[in-house]
Length: 431
Image (cartoon, rainbow, N blue to C red; front, side, top):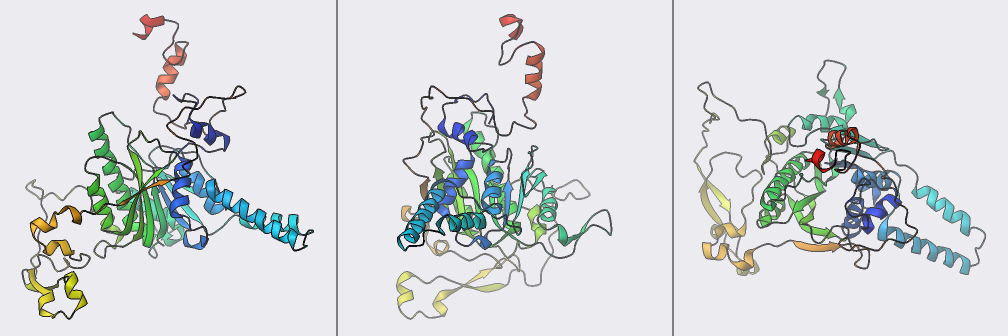
């Protein structure tokens, strides 16, 4: 969020600099929290370990630091808490306790803003990010398997013994995290189909990391581009989360394809419980290359099992009318042959799997997640351009880009004596 923004009349752009945020995207996380209570404000001890993926320039990490560590409140939640304090102070005045009103409010504020020591936040991004208070920053690629040990070591440094050898060894399994958020998006090309595909692969990489570090019942929030086949993403997320919703914050432009999937109630797959499985994503993304045999062919050796191909009794879901009455045990089971012994370890047959093709693909069987507009509808409109006041002063960005990809272009323009395409050579020099 630099001074060269194409639209300085954007209300959230100016409000972010006035409230000391690094980017306007901070309001998106605040508004999503207002709707879904990501940070468990009533029970702060439930969310103490958070991973922020694709964190640069650090606006979402800044929200985590100020909310989870410092205990601050923003947006509608801050307004509600302010009204509650005013009501409590008014009740004390009506009860005749006028002397301790000011001191009790100051004590309450000091107790809420006391820094918390048990919060662990790790931020990862491919670009360098300026440090933040209480945030562990990693410069790594979330699509590469080498990021996994770096993340686990950053979450629990005391769980690794680095004194024995050059490669630290794990003493105990790391503690899981309560929340994983991702605001990452690729550099858009303008080709919507290509941008949506790249964004989906980035989402799969973020989900792959979340599957290995989230605790049961944890939450996952990530940016998506709503395209033609976005229902596939929703269905895949639904397999490992109890509840999946789609959120559109008020600060997100309505003209943009972006939205945020809010996944609650993480269900860890039993087959992929170990951290080694993170190198082999179950939904896609970048993984380690497959094994290559001596003759150059890509293949995996198949180990024959003595139980392979044996018939196995599978529990079958009873129809709705049978659940009300007495259903026999024989009618609720069927035989199937398993290719592997662990095929039923984490897979539960769905009722649609036993229906005919006409019933399986019926319109009424389609699962559609909730689409929720987050934020106060009477707040600033992110698509509108508001008239600047006469005494408006353009503020400097809170945190300038540390390593922008266009730095070399700016240096070349500065050498030729101009900026934004204007040089001393004129149109001939620019051509």
